[in-house]
Amino acid sequence: EVQLVESGGGLVQPGGSLRLSCAASGFSFGSRYMSWARQAPGKGLEWVSTISIGGGSTNYADSVKGRFAISRDNAKNMLYLQMNSLKPEDTAVYYCAVGPPPTYTARGQGTQVTVSS
Image 1 (cartoon, rainbow, N blue to C red):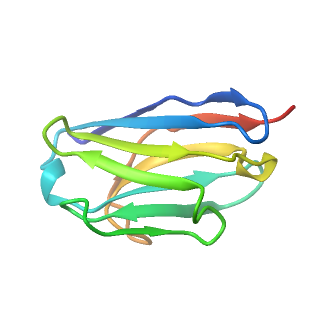
Image 2: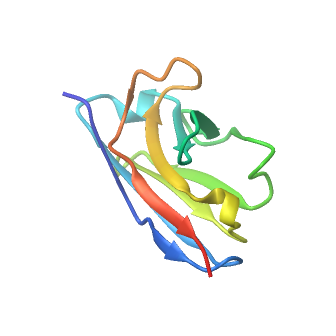
């Protein structure tokens, strides 16, 4: 059974930073592209970033480019999202997902990120 467990969310002031983590199990993590997506209140699921199998290739939504960094540790089956210079519009539930968009094959329960003063 595929399991994705996100952590690291919370309340942060504008301009602050957070690091999200995703613990993966139940599938061959090191053989799959992985992504982060988010859903703001009242909005649809928005792709944030994708990382290749070996981690050498990354892609970002324009809205987060230059502020967020995706990474992975295949030895630990872990996916990360470093978020810097956070803005109120980054407020959302953040999900770890298997595969590139739009055809994620699984995603976790999400972790809430709230950016507010």
